[in-house]
Length: 137
Length: 359
Image 1 (cartoon, each protein chain N blue to C red):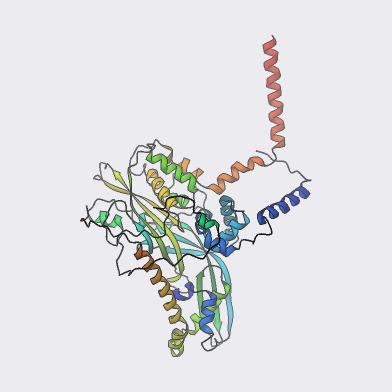
Image 2: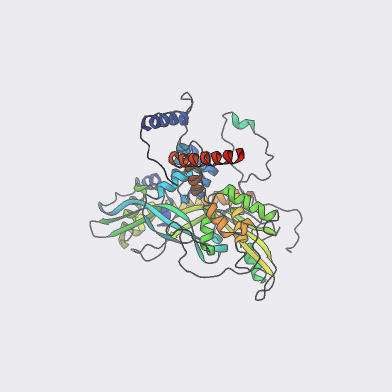
């Protein structure tokens, strides 16, 4: 679900273009946009506090076989939330799960990991290499 | 305060709004700014509007900036107004900033700390000379250099001090925090409520207050234990699922300010924390918030509270720029009847004073 929440509708559709067609579904709820109050912790590790709200879109769908799928994704992309909900439903079928993971989720996860690695590599290039390596304190 | 409903201004208002729209667009011979351009190229303005609007959505914040013609307080106001139209789905699990995907992480207290000093995309060390190359449209800059990231973990500096027992630990607890978007702010306010107010507070106001604590109004001796900027996962636990799911990543800036604490009857001398956490890349705001958070802990730590930054009521009731602008700008509304009575009174007082002087 995290992978689909971080992908755009266009990215999901690009993967679906090369996958078998999604089964028909009926909307149970949404897609609708609302807010989730994001919380932090005082001092980073203490009791929680309310930091501010994040726009979130959610969707719940039912497939013809009765399977229900849910999705929540930050942002206001209704198409993304609906696609994610349908994928959540089809991924619950043990017989088809591996195929859907391979066709959609794994490539998206790989692309996201690639972007994260590129950012980590840029950050690493800005790590200061001190000339004197004194011990701490 | 009383206002009078005045009719007759509709046509003037329509014309004013039409002119506003024309001014917003500027010279039609120039290409129009797009919302994605603002989201991408004025990213720090977008971050500030999300922080002070207390609503994380880059697209909405960028649209608000465009609509407000770059007036960031007006944009925060627009975002606050929009959020009131949306339902609340719930609250997230507390963000784990320790697990942040780091873009920047610096410490002013330890040079060689585990994970190192990572500068990230910073204005620090720039010469603050105007770069006229940016005035001309050119090729995009080459991609930033990359280096092997390794698997360097980035432990919190406050954790390093805590292991030695030199850092006061944070009060633990999983109590439902107060929410000032649901219950109006009331003093005395506990720290979770103060942190919420500061996180959405005006950067300029908090910067000035933080500065005042450094200049002697509040007796602070702060060190930047750590600043970190990067992406954290937002997780919620929807009731229909019953287990936590990730709903996306947001960028946040965190500042841990380390301050001396002389100790009390029950506590030995140790360091204490001021904490800042804001949406987006907002280092100045996170630092100012951490300074003010620490100043506001005076009561809890048994310190003498004499300075403005240590006064909960003063800080919390004045740090919200949307509320402040509302009350200051309401002075523009018609006060004709109020002012008529003031006129009457001052005329009477003058007449009395002049009569008495003549006698």
